[in-house]
Length: 260
Image (cartoon, rainbow, N blue to C red; front, side, top):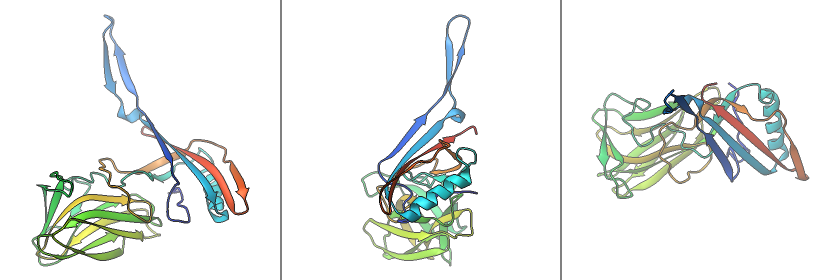
């Protein structure tokens, strides 16, 4: 499926990013004058306004080509929210969106690095490395950053993965945030984000986060995730202002409507 492009820096947008969500309420008016009101989640509309300045010639060309491929507001595409944690249920690895290997035990109620009890323990009771993964229908060619706070009662190593890219981090008794920045598999239409625990090791984790950019930002708890399928451009006109040779500015508005 067509996907909204990243910039040459690996970021999806520039700041500030404006996000507007409009909800809909269904009202049933009774003859006696009373009314029953119910939220209508299917009617929610989300709109992003992305403002760009100082774009290179190559970045301008990429956006123009994308606009042409989408044919303005006609065709849907995959949009990855640049201001969101892409993972669903980032604070609850027991949810079905997370897939643990058979010998990996996941338990909650563990003390987290900020004084709460929102951390989770991952215990590998098997004889081989075990992973906890979540697969998203996100563009495989993107550059992503996966981050998590982790510690272990006994110092050891854990492996972070984005698609087939992996990196090994040493985890100590102190909470530390570990990260991996890597691209997914360009031939795939989905990306798997994971954390692998060695045999016989228990690791405590907090704040798993995936972002479409080269570095981690402040952790944001997420339940729905940040990948939107069948988003659309708001406008049928794409205007670029050239401020200097090789420097361009533009604005892009993107809509996602739940019921479409």
